Length: 482
Image 1 (cartoon, rainbow, N blue to C red):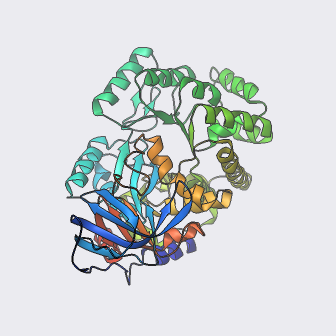
Image 2 (tube, one colour; image 1 turned 180 degrees about the horizontal axis):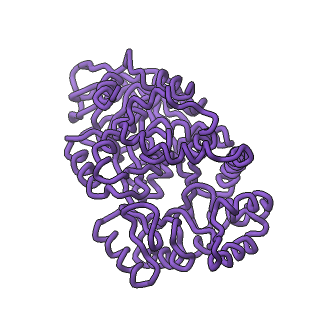
Image 3 (tube, rainbow, N blue to C red; image 1 turned 45 degrees about the horizontal axis):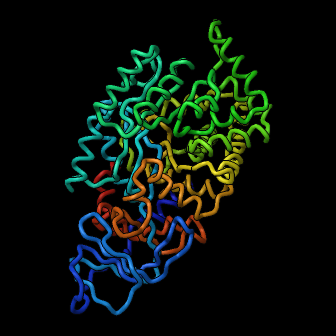
């Protein structure tokens, strides 16, 4: 596929790096571990460039950011960033580590792909590898494993006989309390709710119970529930745009009641059965109402446009020559077959509707942004999500956010400070400032003028440790399987 070949050639054919170590003259200030000099720092909040800056790092924390001058800085390593652009490390706010113990190592091998694309933080949106994720986090903190910081929901909450292995199955208030007790004991970062089997009542009760405990909630949503009701209960974010979309129907009440009535029949109506009716009844006024409600309640949205496009194009796209496949374990590649087979079995009419739907979803993004809804950049990469490659798909997501109508600055915020704000760590992450985590990406060109410039990656700093393009190339070579 040309997209992945060109991206990999531009961003990950890691040759001719600009990482240089030098020794300036006599130091006049306290020593640092790394000094990045003469960088054009991107202020993602203001959407502007602060030219010719010095960023000094000690440990895994930024200790100083100031205008470059003749002052000398004592440091173990120096990086001359003249003419280059420094951004905060990117956040992928929707990934999956899953597949059970047989895929544990294959999932771990995905970690370098995130760093190689400038992603220094990810949010795991539910799976069955929670113990392994906590081990990886400890190893990364200790410096014995390279990879992004990971926020995790742990196991998903769903209804009885849930689709995904490892899910916590709930229906009654007692079961909900037990599930939340379990997640709190695990010390997860938030609660992910899934919609394969959960009832509308249990779904809303999970949100309300988690809200009382001070736990963030996010996830899918059964079509028997209205998004406005979930927002009013305290839902913190909605994943994908299927659920926002139903709330944009001028007939949302009627469609929701239709779904509810069908649940007692032999042919219950689900999300995909209802989407054509939702599309046919789309109403801009209804869209404005739900966007305002989400903004007022600070409910974020994770559009995941890139995976939607990838899946919509599966019937027409040959992925067998994707360059990124060389870095995906064959065991994970084997999980792609389910979605691929399903896509190729769909009718031409269904395939055309899927593409129309993705176009509609793109149109929602700038309207949500304009209404004040927090947009979070997420790829939905991981096992079982066909050809949605870790790292590369987040780059594609940012480009699609701009294609949809966001400015490059807004897209960058969706993948930096917005993620930090959502997870409640904006005091230590998401921007380049004194006291913030030393998670940084050095680019050859300015991403504020063209979001595609995030492909011009020269150096990644993760937890204060710099990785040159050669370092990243070596990390990728270690996981390459052919």
